[in-house]
Length: 306
Image (cartoon, rainbow, N blue to C red; front, side, top):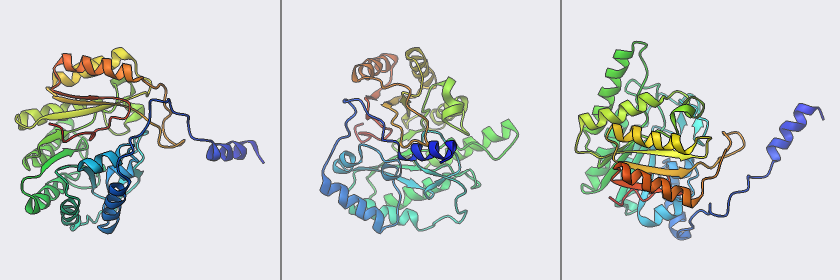
């Protein structure tokens, strides 16, 4: 076997990376996991819980929380950490998806829903209207339900920076006018690692989006999240927290990056539970009103605990 072919073969059969003993996914109720997975399949829906292989999905389902992925399952960005499929989505949007999500939410007896989406740079409004339609459909059936949104940066489509910023703000305003209980946009990593980790997104654009969200809707809390273990150091994490507070971001999640497959960016470091505890205290001291910090914490982990 030629050397290159042999190396590729070995890479495919390489064992999964050994995880530290403190990285243990919660089990939750198997019956609840099967129930939710069945409903998702029945209604032809997507959740980031399943698409991203979240380690907490059984626990969240049992607690009455789920994160729906709208706009299909193919993302126009190609972030190095993400399990979601990348490519060119079908430009024909599924107009019945919001209604099917609303029915599933009702059947799942959810009390808190997080709506996120793949990046849809191919659509005129980058998918902002999909959030609005989904929120409206859910509230039509369950008026009192709490809905959080986790959006992409809504950036792109124009070479002129001023026009691009204006369009981003208009797309953002469309979503905020639907009055979600929380607006979430993840910074994902420190400034130095943005280009390597978040292809197509930038640190300043994301901070700008969070800043604009507070300007457009001061009463809606803003939230962001960081994955640790990609090569950042302690001081860079603290600086990122400070940068988020400078745009009045009020909630933060800190979790350990876990490599979905050998095709994704490798883990450089496993931060310990003690590290996460210390960083959580730093975040609280900086003024974040809600902090979730731990190896298995994800963007929507215990999102319902406001």
